[in-house]
Image 1 (cartoon, helix red, strand yellow):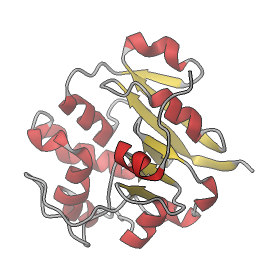
Image 2 (cartoon, rainbow, N blue to C red):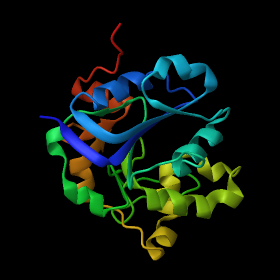
Image 3 (cartoon, rainbow, N blue to C red):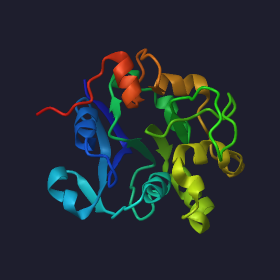
Image 4 (cartoon, one colour):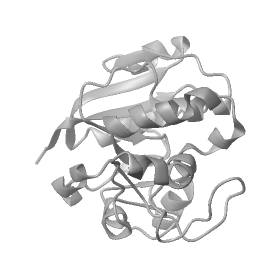
Length: 218
């Protein structure tokens, strides 16, 4: 049975090292229908993504990529939500979908407690979550742009999910943004841990730990 997510746009970026993104998108749409599918590309990638709505956005540095992933600046999104996927993410269990997740502005796999230089300590109060397979509202994209537009070249953007979920979280919550609690986020996705029926997962290590093959078919 096809899962229909008419208020969600599937978004991927193929501008900086995301060469296997097409396989991830095809896998996601095998059993799931989205309101729209947008691929942000360098002009040279056009023939690869025929059939998807393409937005050209030349991206030359990692900071360019992270800023784009954080804000989707210049990309027209016509739904209230975005499912953002990187090339090493997979939507693997559409039956796990919970409409409750649409009450949040951000949901991604929870992180374990850790410290990342330049960002607040990660703990249970700010551990949601991973951006590589994440569901976000259009509202959070707009607010993140407002927060970072004057600092677009700052190295604090090198991990956009840590920026959103730790550095900016207090400010975003003060502006009405709701992050999913860890228990809901764990049902949504996992990263660097054993898979247990989640909607999706992110990361090469996650795939290796669980026997998922990220290799595109020949």
